[in-house]
Image 1: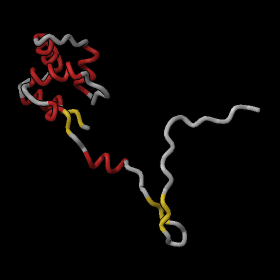
Image 2: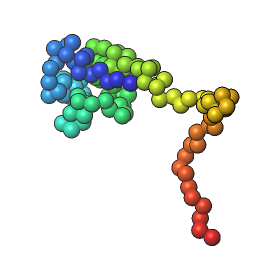
Image 3: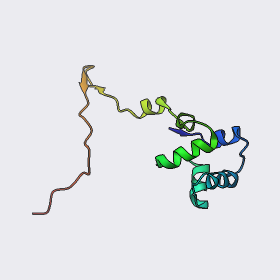
Length: 107
């Protein structure tokens, strides 16, 4: 996902994070300076749905305008399902192990 907040803000004539922060406060969303800086300069790992609703209302956009899907990045991260063996035969890869790998306890 790509976070498109700055572009949508610019389309509404908002060029500084302080201006967006002021408008969000006017809509009932109090944002700390640190949180506003994180939203403005980088892609957040999480966004509360209530906050997203207020941001969309202030910027007059939809969540789809703010969150741009990047399927090519997902495809690049997908592990290969098969690997070629030395003799040319195709050998399926074992499924990935999930969870933490733990060592056996001492005897």
